[in-house]
Image (cartoon, rainbow, N blue to C red):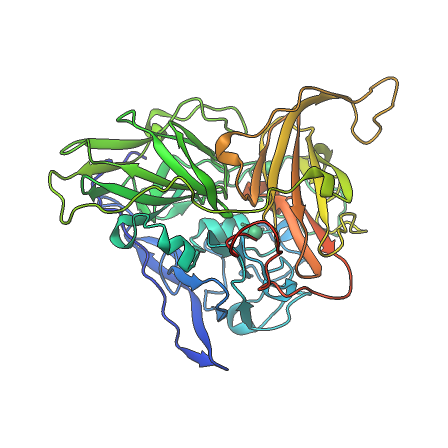
Length: 541
Ligand code: C2O
Ligand code: CU
Ligand code: CU
């Protein structure tokens, strides 16, 4: 359906306030609610699921080393808003369809507060998953200032829960970042980009596809209309929950915290004025130095922290565009509609003069040396098995989330290199919970990484190419391109236990491109004590 562009102002999510304190720690309560929300001038109100009744949810403003507590509550209806296939979307048959659990993406938290896919709970905690432990989550915030986000992570239906609206922002800040004098306050603006499709009555459309074959085992109940599509691509782009919005800006510098919160769509963003973004950070916080760039690729869950200077564009209208050569996982070029994301309307006058700066030295952090790595793990991205409906399944290391044993078992505090050999036909954004990592390089490969010396199919690695300049900071999500091996390096910890790692294309994550990994050893480290030795202060992790 086609909707007029740039007719609604960009909304800004509100900042959530604590409802009280527990043992001196700020205590928040968040209810997931089904509400109607106006997403475009000409669209009837849409039924969405929102944390505290808003889509996107309220924004958390956290301070480094200052913990908070959050009670996440499910107050959603009993039936899902979107088509769920109970036979394959549930962890077990006949589970309630509205299962939820909240993950703080990019957060360094203990496993029991991470939003494990099996830690789901239904309305009023009536039913809970295998790994459910407690209702109130503890977030230590002992990590670098960074643009985190929280979103649903319930096993098998994350794609539908997030699509219904269950996502919100969570910023960690500190005095070092504030001392930089970057654009702040009303000149620092989050932009959460998501695609959606709508029925003419305003309701969210999520496709279901007819079942090719009935299940082979007769004891499995047969539902003729499962909701699995290989990837969801909407025909409409929303920013902060509005369709193709506009934002009035002053002719000065702005800091935009850009998130790709889409299920599957990649964006390649540019400014129609031809001007550069000055990218200052990624998922894990600020870079060492600013990186000017015309173009930024954002796969699902990737973030870009950018400064845009509108001072030479008084009175202009500038479009944030999505270029046509975006590397879609399925290779489809965007329709002309999707070549535009939002509009900036530059005013002719400043309210105050702009004293913000873009310092050359943004932050300091440890560059993880490959020589530190105690283990190099070969991981493969595969599309070589079929589910019981005969459709291809996407897997990691030829295994799905439930398959045992857990094969990735780093020891707490150690550095490892993970090689990601993509043997599928698409790019996959691979995300690890708990840690921020660095990208070492990418290289093409042929042959079999699991049997490298096989004379019939030897592993041959091409030249290792360093990451782009705007991929050299801390990342929690990396694009692993097809036919390439992407190498990342991380120091695992500071907590022990089981965490997921997965493709962040939510349709892939659900079926079944997600694996557990386990940080071993019997003691945790104090996350609030930084690793010494690299920087003059503790402005690194
Ligand atoms: Cu943003 Cu495991 O997810
Ligand atoms: Cu995550
Ligand atoms: Cu994927």
